[in-house]
Image (cartoon, rainbow, N blue to C red; front, side, top):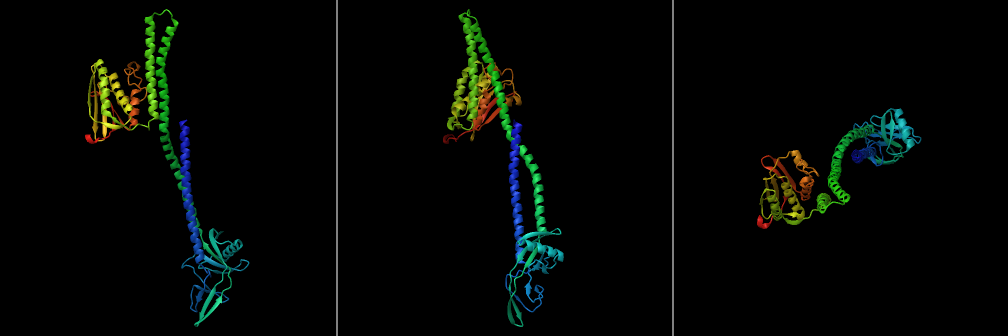
Length: 444
């Protein structure tokens, strides 16, 4: 299931990024192509014997003035050294009359290009000949020529010409083709890179889901196991009562006491499970009431002193006054109860428990330390897993099901706090939390 989910995320992420990359490459290529075409068109429109304007011709020799056999004058506008353009004048059938260019192709090539251009009758189209690409433009306009001879100005009108200007665009089109191949190569490489990155992020994305699913399955299995024992005891005692009508009142009372004890334990387990479920559902809806943490901790410690005395344990406390914060008062009090109850359960006789509440600037810390056998780092971390008990001493006979510390962890996380868990042979086992507290004007 998770493999299919990962593959779907991988495919979706790769497809979306690939489409965006393809769109970006296409936009760049189209812009480059449009710019190249516009530049070529501008060059065609502004070069060659385009006789759109009146020109003045003198008797002086000018290499840019062409006088044909009819005595008509045409002014060339080719750029100096430009070998990429030439102009062809054609007759009505499209046959070449004259060719004007610094270095035109051979006559056969000129005839082929002129014939194709004349047949197509399209401006700024591209023709191919002998591996070269030629863009052409057809000009049919005449021009008014002003001729000055010995100070006398004579104006003549040039008859309409059939001129075709050709521009070699092989290099620009080759550059666009190269750009296209570069985009293809880069796109192919990026596709593999994107697929690898998408796989990494897909694995990271499904990891919390997979972990939550595994924990949920483990939670259901552990809950079923924990409920099975009290249910079996209740069923066995009920069967004993129903099967023997000769039992005296004392025997019946004993069986009923067993049933009640197991029912109470099962009820406590169910309440803890509901508390965990409620904490998960309301993780983002923690109350923001003002809470006097000092008073709450003091109340819990005073209530637990009698229990500590009965178990022959020493309970000391050092609680800083006027420590307050924003949160859910009932949940925070439950967290303190869980820590003290956990310490009372697992501290050996004649042991010691200390409770310390301190504040430093905007942080407050509660630490509950009890004497006892030190736990390993692995055990400390796993104590916050649901239904986990570190050793045989932490079993259901102690009245716990391994849900206290997970509930405590959930409450601290709801209040954006940090959990404290430490253990060593000299100082014992310590659990607590660090929360952000408020600072009152009279306590600063």
